[in-house]
Image (cartoon, rainbow, N blue to C red; front, side, top):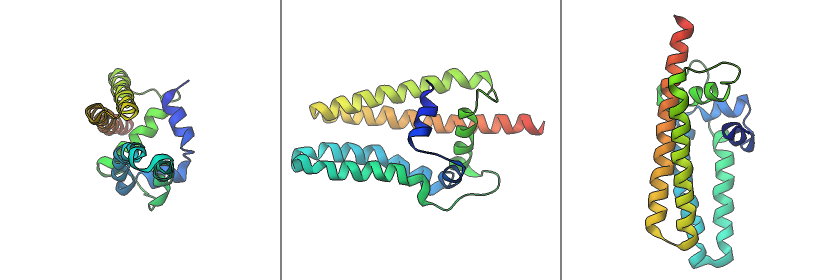
Length: 163
């Protein structure tokens, strides 16, 4: 199973959602999701079972986020737009192969993010702030670097199309 496709399906991303997600407001506001989720889960210390309310709110925001912004039309511009376009190319790599130089790096960055998620959730389980912060740094840093790599992928593949 392709973990990238699984993530796309879990978010129910269609062409309209992708056009809206290409909006810089959508891309940049998603960087708040993991810290907010960590805070919501940690809030069980103060709120008990009521912590489910902020957790559900963050999960709902995560799903709504790509749908909240105006759709972007035309060719992508800027880091956010090109990163989103590159991510769509990455998801379609079985139908349209991507340059080999990107494949291993993208998988490595995904592994870094996944390892960060393991640390994050271990820290949340044990209420260890150091693990939570390390997990957030790795998960978010890996994802930001992945998006940056998607910009590079987009530029490489559109350069090939016009060459």
